[in-house]
Length: 284
Image (cartoon, rainbow, N blue to C red; front, side, top):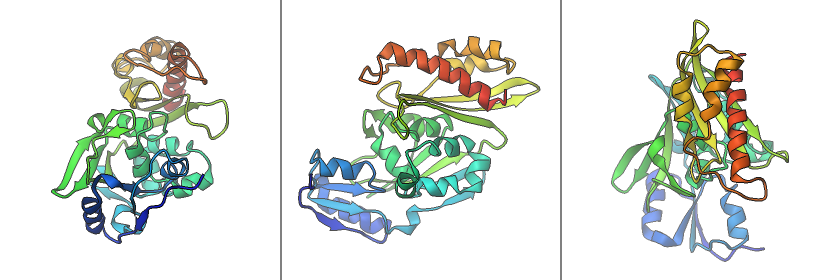
């Protein structure tokens, strides 16, 4: 199908984008990489009067180090994340998850910020960002504000980014030296996750000292497997000990039932994939 007619604006600065958003109000949509929005427009599931393209705003791109954080501009592409030595060294889980996003063509167009604001619970970025305890910087008419990843995802396709606001950047605490793994289950290559698990952990003296685990497509938002995180602390990085701790992986989740599998099937998958991801992250 052909999208409904709309006005198009591509401001060169963030401030001009915010001004355009304020002028258009509810009648505007923000375009990042377009990998989620453009199919919606083509199917006429949404018909905005104005499309505000952030693609020309250089201040929203790039990866830098700021003290004990890695800072990723919201318009940074997946491909740029994969090419970054800084991300691989200090936020390895994000790099491993982004590697599983679709195909090279999508990764060269899609953006980290666009995926986070789209907030599809089956997307591959939300759970790793949540597990890494990132904070998201949102720009609006009144300036900037920071929101913890745990408070950013509110519901299905709903985030803390409000009317007239734009996600500007993601601040990820450095997890230098931590093991990481992203275990994704799909039936067809390049598919959205049926279930995926992102794990980053620190092993000290053969035992797991700290663990962070994010679950993909196990509820209306990305989730933390906090029961497993707590159960892993102090345990040896062995198959038996990890298997026992990961039995609680689906605790507190509310996965969907659809053509790809029932809720019970997803709960089983979450348990199996969490165990695999933890062992891989620990180097076992």
